[in-house]
Image (cartoon, rainbow, N blue to C red; front, side, top):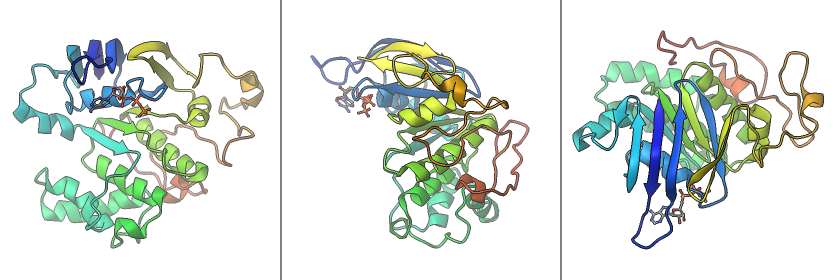
Length: 284
Ligand SMILES: Nc1ncnc2c1ncn2[C@@H]1O[C@H](COP(=O)(O)OP(=O)(O)OP(=O)(O)O)[C@@H](O)[C@H]1O
């Protein structure tokens, strides 16, 4: 789905490379954490996959396209396949919740009647029903991130890139966002998330790609955040079901993938389930 082939990126002449011969391949439907020290190149990887930046050397392939030969006029169609979520939400401040999400459909030329149906559905999925008319400054950080996720997904992209999506949120709110991303991934969407949040990385046990100075230091299936050494009490924490129980540090709800998105209430970390069925392409 996403392939980096020996990619180097030098932003300014003479500067240290942000990426320095980095290679990695991410398959359709994977959930991958990109970790590494500040400046190790995580955001650069995401920007290259979006064709916001171009490599100085090497190639990036996304959804079967070689981005080095992709014409500029095809970049919007590439980006329609990719949802993006940022640490700072990046909502349009003068638009309501509904309008922020609707905007993503309008720019792709969707008809008004389709927008009128789809936006409330997606807002319900992320737990924001009843808040359609609010503006971003009238929402909590977690709610703003839910709007951003709704906007990222309303076009049913096959890839979600998330750059520190929990970086501005408290642990409980972050947990709700992680649950939402996990459930989105469970519908078949490829998720790549750059993060410094060691707690979630250690608990979710997804693939971890660790960057250091622009190269892949570690690529670990069912990985952990640091050093590649499992935490000593992991087996003790694993329940008979295979799910991880709470750690002493963790918020009071487990994170686990399920085969479909759940209700907004569940996404916020409380019980109750309304299933949103994925389409045959594994999208929702
Ligand atoms: N637009 C830019 N112009 C010049 N240098 C840049 C630019 N963007 C990133 N860099 C440099 O490239 C290197 C990698 O940055 P990048 O943002 O990819 O790291 P990161 O791992 O995402 O860091 P963080 O965890 O702090 O977000 C850093 O040395 C950074 O200063």
